[in-house]
Length: 77
Ligand SMILES: [Zn+2]
Image (cartoon, rainbow, N blue to C red):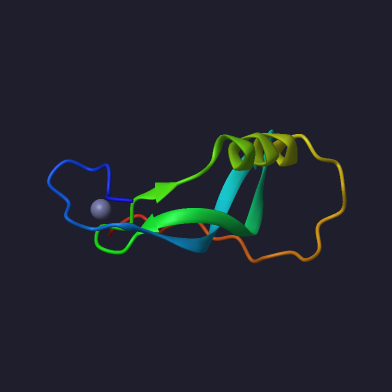
């Protein structure tokens, strides 16, 4: 499938991506999300089913499989 970004000549390839999702006051990170990623510009497409599952995860209370260090991008001096 050709990239949907105007002017991009790339095409989507099946891949897996990582996304951070805000869950109230905290941020959860989800990895191994199936996605179509443009091999040229990096545009990411999710299927409606994947978006639905991500939305479900936003409300999950299940324990995470791991925790990650969280940083804020530093302000320039
Ligand atoms: Zn593209």
